Image (cartoon, rainbow, N blue to C red; front, side):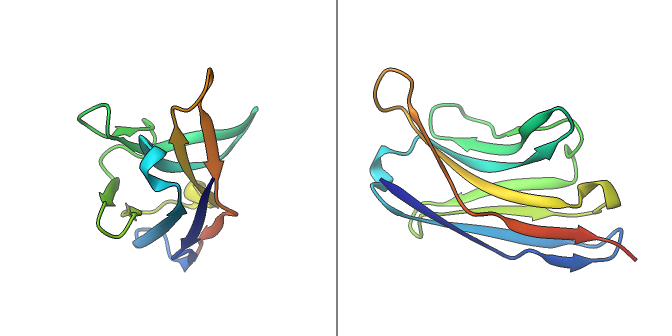
Length: 120
């Protein structure tokens, strides 16, 4: 079992920056990827950014490329999302995700989410 706790959300003006953090605990050695998701029209959640130990480069949604950066501190079991040049359409609850390739389909773990509001 993996437990995820997010922090760093809040209210920011358009063009501003925020950094989200997600600390993992529990069976962290099973995790192969960590990232961030947010709700999207027609989907429960869409990928924002993910950092995988299996693939070299992080993966980003087209809508955030060049503005958001995902990074991991393995010593702290923490994944970060640096969000710059924020836009009102980035307003959402951001969920931390950890994926463990365990069993036939793998296991996705989720945090409770942290709210980001971009507004003037």
